[in-house]
Image (cartoon, rainbow, N blue to C red; front, side):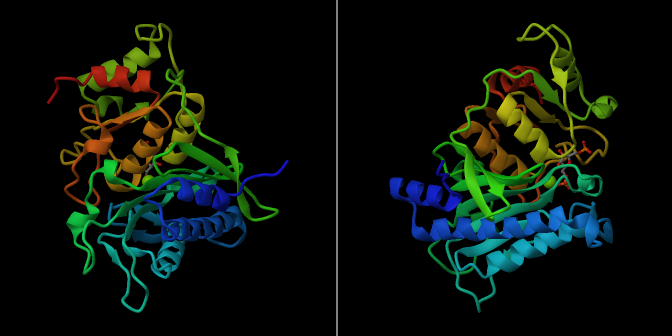
Length: 335
Ligand code: AHM
Ligand code: MG
C-alpha cells in the first residue's frame, strides 16, 4: 500500500488553504528534521553518555537534563537558520531567542518545549517535543514581546513529537488533527492516524494525586467524582498518570479521558499549577479542540487566555469534552 509522507500531506493542505504559503510548509519541514535528529539522540541516549543532569537549573528553577539541553540546542540551531522565523521562545530560555541578522528573517514565531517530561528520560519513559507557531502581527522590524504573547486561538499550527515505542508527530493547522509515525528504515514520517477524533466521553483521569493536601476544595471534589460512581459516567474512571505530559495527553487523545494539572498551594506564589501556557497548554489545547475535545483552566477556554508573560503557568484540564465539562463544573463561580 502506498503511504503518504508528512511532506505530501503538508503540500496537499497547503494547496487547500488560501492562507498557506510554501514558506510555512518549509518551516514545518525544518522542524520535522530537527525532531528526527532529537529522536535519533533520544534513541541512543543510554549508549552515548547523554543521560543525567547537566548540573544547571533552567529559567523555571528546574534541573536541566543533558538531553533537554541537547534537544534545545538542536532546535535553536536548525530553526535559526531556516529563514522563516523572526523569533523563537523555548521553555528552557528566559528570554526571546532572536534570529541573528546574518540569517534570513521570516514572519513566523515558534515556541517550544524541547523535551517535555524530561524527568523521565533516564528511565526510558516516552517524552516529547511540543510546538506552537504564530504569525507576527507587524510587517517587519524587531519583534517585541507583545507580538509573541498572543492568545492561543491565533496559533497557525501546533502539535508535538512523541519519542515512544515509535516516534510520532501529531499536528494541526486548523483543519483537523493528523498523526504520522516515523518509519526509521526510510527516515520518513508516514500518515498513520488521519483526522484524529478524541472520544467525547473518556474512561481515564490523569492527575498527580499525591498533591491532594495542596489542593483546594473544588479540586478535591472534582477528583473524588472521577474516582467514584458519583459522576456523569456513573462509574469510576481508571487512573493513568505517567508524569510525562505528551505521553499522558497522547494516550487520552486517542483513547479518551482527561488530563489535569490543577493549581495548588505548594508555593504560595504558585497559584497556577505547573504547566506553561505558551509552550505546553496552548499547543495541546489547539490540538485537542481540533480533535473534538476541550481545554480549560477551570474558568476559561485555554485558547482565549490573554498571556501576560512568556513563562506564565496555568491550571490545565484537557481532554474529552464531557470529562473537561465535568471537571470545570466544580470550579464555576469560584475565585
Ligand atoms: P517539564 O516540561 O520540565 O518536563 O515539566 C512538565 C512535566 C510534564 O511533562 C508532566 O505532566 C508534569 O511535569 C509532571 O509533573 P509532576 O511530577 O508534578 O506530576
Ligand atoms: Mg514541559
